[in-house]
Image 1 (tube, rainbow, N blue to C red):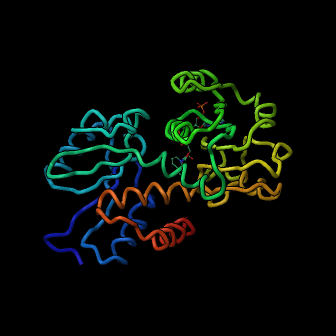
Image 2: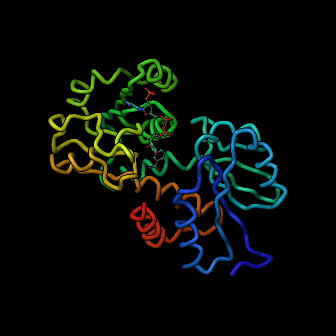
Length: 277
Ligand code: NAP
């Protein structure tokens, strides 16, 4: 039951109507009996600055930031955590007495999802995609000491830009076969395979072998064609929803100050919400 002391958190983005974050965070508040509530605000680019001032004026405690504002929001904050600054994107704002600090929990969510199944240190990783998700994931892979990272993207120029920022190798999708042959981990970060194009994949099934760990950032559908075919090829896999879960867990802890978020309850809420899509 909301009351005058309820702390409000929210996600801002455009679109946000189908966001999974409210279900996941509210389930956590409920099970811990926290006087918090989490909602969603649709905010377009023109409204972004005023929306951020609104966070401050209304004392909104925590705000998750999604597409298309993760970069643009940075100039309106009072402080940005060093890691988020390095990645160049913020997905989390914490309001402490009117001071707004930006964080990035996406990268850590992605790394935790992989580390549930395999270690990253010393591994060779092929990352497909050079968009927004790839920035944080690439940063995380290097932070976790991957031995080698190769960025492959449809538009090779974008792969080149990101790879030169990170000091790693790059190429276009034609190189997939030879690059995968030497890889331990494949991290798929493009939107290929996402609803309503579930039948698409960038990776021919014959390139998948049992000693390749395969992870896909796409979480809708729950199991993408790439993940299904990787399982059929006896690869160990990480599903995209795990990344979503873990980035939300870190946000939950930042907003509430709780040391260990109720992960299982948040996961259940997330899966229920995803299965309704
Ligand atoms: P983005 O910035 O728009 O980047 C899209 C990427 O997909 C680019 O590399 C783009 O290549 C590539 N791509 C798009 N259409 C393609 C096609 N037909 N053939 C080959 N490549 C294509 O998007 P994003 O924010 O990085 O998100 C990418 C995916 O990750 C989305 O499905 C999103 O839902 C998911 N995601 C998941 C999580 C999670 O927590 N699990 C978090 C963030 C994002 P070009 O450069 O050539 O256009």
